[in-house]
Length: 421
Image 1 (tube, rainbow, N blue to C red):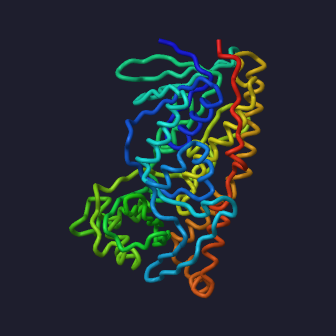
Image 2 (cartoon, rainbow, N blue to C red; image 1 turned 90 degrees about the vertical axis):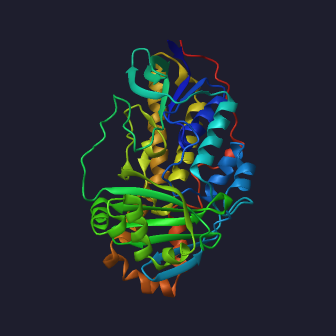
Image 3 (cartoon, rainbow, N blue to C red; image 1 turned 120 degrees about the vertical axis):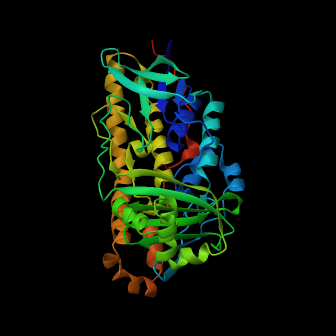
């Protein structure tokens, strides 16, 4: 079996599903490949910054998100040992939704996937991409996929990689470094009912060897997520007594012990389901100008989760790329002209991506390393006690009030006139 499309999107998370929707709405034929069945829980802090709400409105999800998401996130806090420093979050300057919300990923991902399907994208799920081969002579990519025990090929002049960072890329990509390091950051997440966490509060957790956060999402449940160094986790598991050997329970015991705020928030709470784990996460930029690859979301670059901008970068990177693609019909020609145009679009997209997101990655890395090292953070605590508004400045600097997409509601669909041969 062999099928042709304008574009193939690998991965149906927030980045991939958004890209598939935008291109399908613009008149492209799109195949959206997703290896996992939905709905599925995923390790994520689940915060959606206010800067993304206009994008979700343009995707047709604004109303349902406001109904199903948690309360508006109006305050930020730093919980470090016995410290609990709180400040007002800065609102988004424009629009009628100035504050962010939180929504469980099993709901957000499914909503976005269904929007892509409704726009006309062909959703292949579960379906795994095995390899991507580029034919520069024909200006087309061939994707070998496996679905239901069968293998077949799809081809398109544009392949968008939205497979995240915790999965190996297709075979022609750079192999994932599987070496274990003591400094590896492992990610954990659990859901709790009946917590004492205030609605609208977004506490950042700082403890030796890791950092995390809590938030009230939809249905009144609270998400507790964190990243912890592999060596710190190993020490906790080896000295954990009754929870020795169980990573999630060891992480929960550590958070209760290290952060008074967590202890108080979970005092009368019950965990819903099991702890989820993923990683290691290795933040950094992965896309490069000139290699011809279209990468979005965590496949393009991963930010330390301490600033809660992972979903933002996923949604906004999809928009940035699709703005370039949907306005460039020649990018879909299967000839030398199309190949040159595609490379030009890729270079322009990489430049815009770096302009909007490079500072977020740098600031997030600074915040993360300070949070994990109490000796670095200790001199800042007296200053934050006197001027808690500095927390709001840090949130604003990390990009929560700005979007890489200027006017999503004004985006006009472009009807693609030429299909790949």
